[in-house]
Length: 151
Image (tube, rainbow, N blue to C red):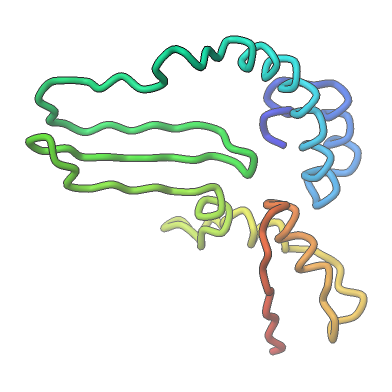
């Protein structure tokens, strides 16, 4: 969703202005990506040569810290590594679900899931299915059980 909003995609920014960020807009934001990627993927497939090696070993002495950040289907993905004398000493992955499900930070700012649930109508508190819809809208692959507690 953020990717389309930052890109200023007019249909999507109009939808966000009219309805706000919600489960439906998160699902709709996933639709353009395959249409954009399919032609590029065809090009990538045509560049594959089974006769050429797909891996080239790298010689040398490795020491240092590195990170890689990318955008996955579910959101931001980060990898951090520390290498000492050609040995991995520390490796950390922060997945999109980790970002999205994060608790409040030190300033009390809610994580994305918590913020998205604020104001969600629950027509039937005994069967709060809307809570599951909201959480799953962040990750269409996520199979989760959402537990609710009454006060």
